Length: 392
Image (cartoon, rainbow, N blue to C red):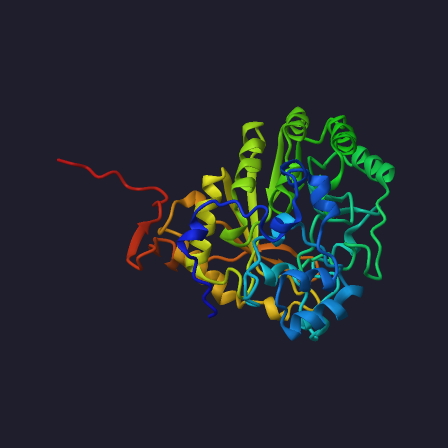
């Protein structure tokens, strides 16, 4: 197993600003503006080469993979990249590699079967009481292992065509839907105003109880998490947010402040990590990550096995590793810090929880279990009609 040992530095919250932009005389005001960050994203090979020593695999990856998923990296996130190390866990997530152009027989364009569960364009209805609402195809930066790389970033052959009015009508008509997850792309790329139009429209539908936003913007672009945005979100409770952090280095001071601001406005936060080879396929790295998340008031929610997306084999870790990570967390850190490890069943079967085996044996009389130290314990099953014990 590739061990990316977390230094003590990764356990602490640091600011990396302005980092690679130190010689650009960027004002504090610009740096802290999400619009400046978006305008100054790294999107070309020459910009990358200004800052980093690229490996041949990376250079070829940038040249060849541009028709599949665009490259874009915010200055904030780019500053977390190690200039010299091609195995840097941040680099592996956002800089294309030539392996992205390789595909194997079992990989799929749509591993979660979303396209076949779309009653109206942009709305995925796969579980009885909840829907996924893909509101945009753009993100602040692009993860190289993106499950929806077929539709995000605007360069693939498939386009996301969301029909908002048709989506709202569908939601109004289907009274069994009580939970709407806004995703994409990244919903927080919208202006406060545009996002509020969507949230208020959803809130006007009486049977919708629960709203969620899936976003990586608090990590890629913490400058977007403004007091104004948080105050607007606060009006639409219960509203939860799922963020996406894979490595402790991503949790900088700026990210922590943004997450705390959301939490202070009553937004419960959960984190979804993807198990990635060379990034977080290591118990120690994951332990630092989940504990650091709790310090940001974020509950580690899911650890995903990598979806079988085309061109992702270089990032795939075995399922065994995921089980070992959960085994190494359960009992060794607080229960709040342990995510649920899941495989999104290929082809649209939904999330299947994968757990280490803690039940050793079971029959009608007892269940034999083991704990995190490997010790076994017996739990008796209730006896149907126990005869009274007469005590003469």
